[in-house]
Length: 279
Image (tube, rainbow, N blue to C red; front, side, top):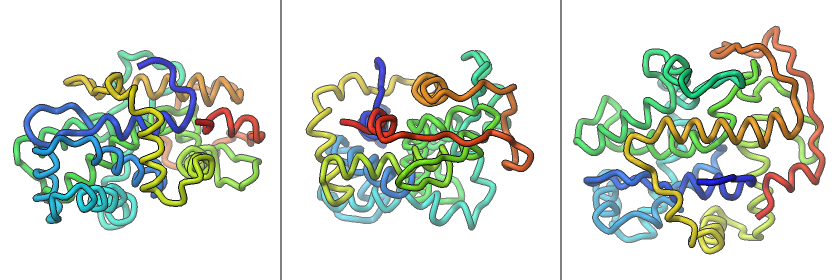
């Protein structure tokens, strides 16, 4: 897919890799707005048959606007609902690939098939075959939409013994909770401000207009979820950890908390934020 230096293209990539929920898969943490933008772009790229299928699952009209609205609402449920009601789903949102890892280490970083890579493949199969789990088809759609967004957030696929940047404090304006939050939310909002869209719907459409001609390069290959994760972690290594720069730490995946983690603080200048979010 080539080098993806900006958050705008990463958001668009998540949406253009839209899952066709009927028949062949072509495919399809961010904060709330990032996931909504991804879902709207995905909805815009569904085939008519897939849109009808999704509309039936989400129990809305098959009109484009209704499906896009329903998909945007579904995409945030894993964060707003399921994280609290079903805490066992928390590890499903990411895969901790250390900076020292090679592609062959990926299976070991997905213990018990409870990571974003395995869950995308699982929910793709469930929706394709009509075998929903206890969350039901609506819940399965929500997870799939959400996880395809998550796997394109580089810090959901990488760790530098810092829980995907969650343990790295950030000095910047506007304020950010940590490096992970910067990518989840702050840079997405910066993109929205840059395109002067005003709403997630308008932001999605403006990104589609700008990058739409490139969507053929975003096709998700069959059984390609692991390759997407590997590409995403490569972006984290090059565009975040190396670019800032942050010293490489010993590999410690699956840290339970930031307690006793000394990842330090990074300062993000306006130019560095612009480099990552400029469209």
